[in-house]
Amino acid sequence: MEWVVIVFVVVGLFTAKKGIQIVQQATVKIVERLGKFHKVAHSGINFIWPYMDSIRPFVLSGQRSDYVDLREKVIDFPPQPVITRDNVTMEVDAVLYFQVTDPMKAVYEIVDLGAAIHQLTVTSLRNVMGELTLDETLTSRETVNAKLRDILDEATDKWGVKVNRVELKNIEPPSEIRDAMAKQMKAERERRAVVTEAEGTKAAAVLNAEGERDAAIARAEGVKRSTILNAEGVAEARVKIAQAEAEALKRVRGGLGDASPANYLIALKYLESLEKISAGQATKIFLPFEASGILSSLGGIRELLRTEETKPAKRE
Image (cartoon, rainbow, N blue to C red; front, side, top):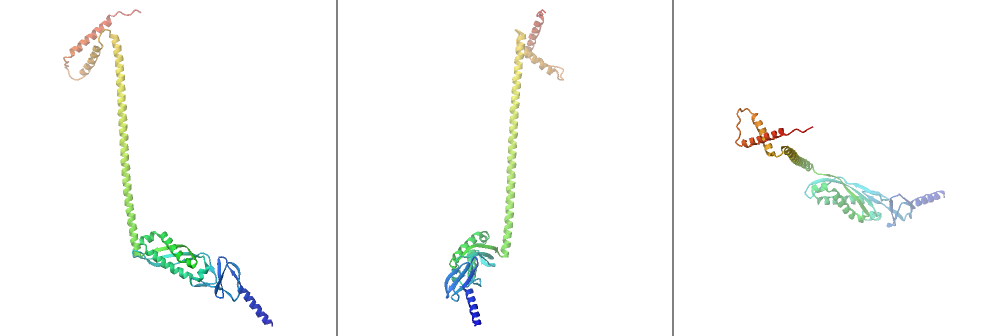
């Protein structure tokens, strides 16, 4: 009898253990009753009927488990050969980030979710890259990533999967294409260097021309200003001289009385001219015929001086 009790106890414990399912956080289990979907067991303690309920396994990339992980997963694809629109074969590897949003669809709609996503990604990558040229594939990674994500997200929606991101890790063209691209890049850099140098020379020539023009303008302005100042100085000097001569004439006129001031000035200028003429090396001097009028002026000066001498002196 004791062994019967032991058997019942063992069977009871085993049955109780099968009836209690502990589900980890961020995971779920698919519960089937008599081979048919019954419910989704969420994280925590779940009770099921032993021998009637069972856990449906979940297959991901060939690995079976009794739970469905709801966290975001990563699939790293090895380099895949693709052909571009301009018939260039190259190696492309990508990374896919996805998350199970409907565990029931992930279990019942597809046999192996990981393998299905892998094959779908490879074919979609080849289709998208086949629509682009080599240059477009190298410069449009963001466009390729967005297009792949939209295609995969729409295709995997019936499997209860949300594709969050698709990233192209590396694009490896053939060696001859890389060599040609390197030569093209070198030629482009040399062209840019020549253009930059030419633009610098042009800018320097323009600046030099502008500097010479500004210097010429400044010199012209200086000459103009100097000429104006010289002219103003000459004019002012002539005005001063004229004023002085006018003042001298007034005083001469006051001293001459009835005598002509003009004859006096002419006589003085003539005497100054004779002084300059006599300063030369010539021993003979010929006076012009018009000098008789001048000499008469000298006579007037003599009379003037004589008149001054005959005037009585003022008494003290």
